Length: 96
Image (tube, rainbow, N blue to C red; front, top):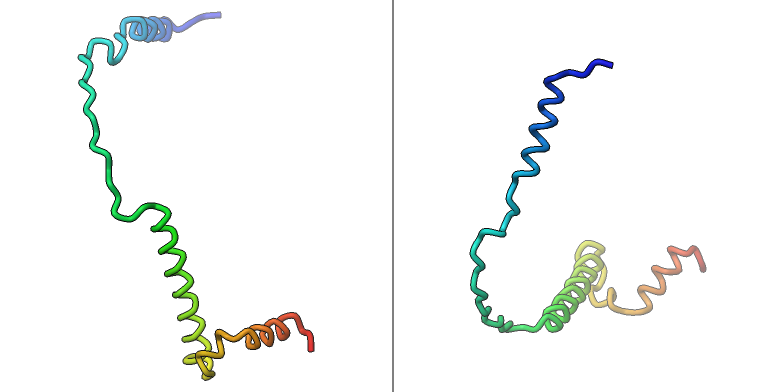
């Protein structure tokens, strides 16, 4: 089986390149460690999560009232009553 002399030469050149490469970072001077100033948060993470949950619940209630009262031509406070949601559930599940 005949081999291509150019391919053999390229293979040898690649082997030489990998053998000659110096390891990265070995010759670099080490940086001095800097102490980071601790970050002081105004609002702790748990408080941020609580605020987001409360704002989401508030947006849901406002959306319910606008949808039921303004778009649906009903009384906006009726959207917050249990009887209204029981009636809607009965309609969805097709019970009398």
